[in-house]
Length: 183
Image (cartoon, rainbow, N blue to C red; front, side):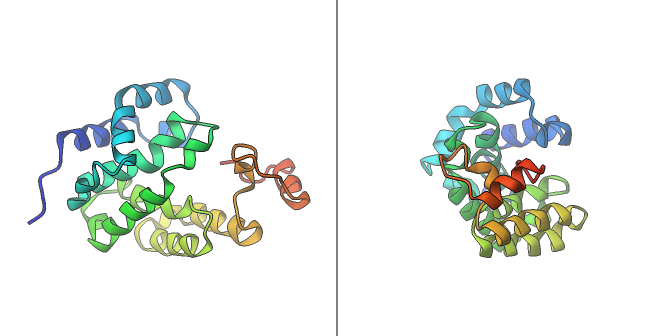
């Protein structure tokens, strides 16, 4: 028997769902501040793996993934911490997908169980992400393919180089200067 979702997990989902796509996929300082103010403690609890038990049900899994994958991209924008919990997010997402939780969460939220794989700089994760998008979010497949093509070409996301203090190759610089994907 799967556990009942934690009320804090439901609060994360409610916040995210209420914000909607206009906040999810755009830079918005007000949204980032509200997300940070309400859920910073939960993010760090998730990062310390104190909320791993949330993976026992679909809603808890979604909230955990949001805290580990999406939250850092908003709360720690333009800092290395944006990516610090990506591995934990992928782990939680893999557990959720293996448990078939993706079918228990309606669109568009189910998409966020797939997103951690296209945030990875590992080509195997990228290919898995494309497969997940094909199956669970075909309307957004182009987004997944674009991410995979960048990793295939460069082995990493060039737009992260500045944040992670990595040197850019000439090809990466040209890609960025010509308006290539900037995150």
